[in-house]
Image 1 (cartoon, rainbow, N blue to C red):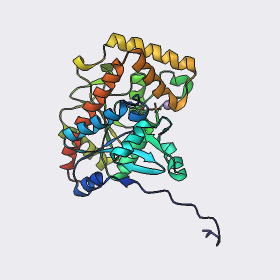
Image 2: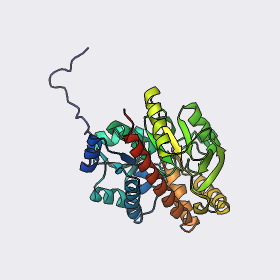
Image 3: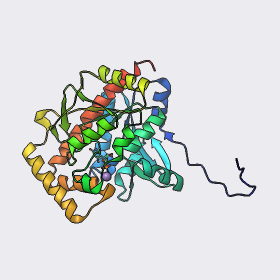
Image 4: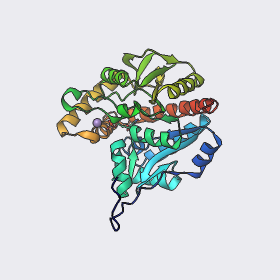
Length: 316
Ligand code: PSU
Ligand code: MN
């Protein structure tokens, strides 16, 4: 091994994650905690209403019985649990970066700020010892992926990260059957919550099914505990909206086709695709997709809270 010569420049170490006092206390005491991502706030919901949604999502986790830990990177520091002023910053900054796992090292090393996606939130949550995470819809395989190779890093990260993520399926702007195939190849455990119908984010039924269903938060927690004991990797709990709370399926199909062709026409690429399409949908549906998006996130947050409560009772 070659030792650094005296006088060689030293590379600064990047800062360790900062836990909010409430999250730190809960984790030390073994109380239930649910991780929440910040990309859906900063890049998935319009300003300034995203700030109220941030509070509502945290309140939904509390209603489920757990402590919320919204995650973001601010000035190079990963924060697990955001104080009100930090949530203000995440929700207000129009230039906040979108950080997937591969972007984290750059943000940490260079002191940058950004919102975390499903992939980077899952990674930071697991590192902090948080097992349960809630989002809206997972990223996945885009419909034109055969040409673009556009597949979300959410999938590969979940294949190796020991967290349970509650979602309303994958975003319906995606190729849902292809995404389910990739989740299978990547050995990500997928269960429906009280159904084997795989939800379609804004709509209750994506047209695809899954093999397994869990019937309670306790069963979901037991699946995560079993997965942790076996092999590293994640568990997806797909929680559909009830039929009477979903987006009208006819409106859904129409606005999605429209949004996807707008994205293609605008030549949007890479990580800009999902925010562009969501924003287009919110406008084209006159806020209908936005209302449904917030509703499904709240339901997922509350269920995640209940699952975290059940998990806190499982010996590790
Ligand atoms: N769920 C929502 N809205 C969102 C997202 C999830 O209800 O905006 C975000 C998540 O952060 C997810 C990301 O990781 O969309 C996927 O982005 P991409 O397709 O670029 O991987
Ligand atoms: Mn992508």
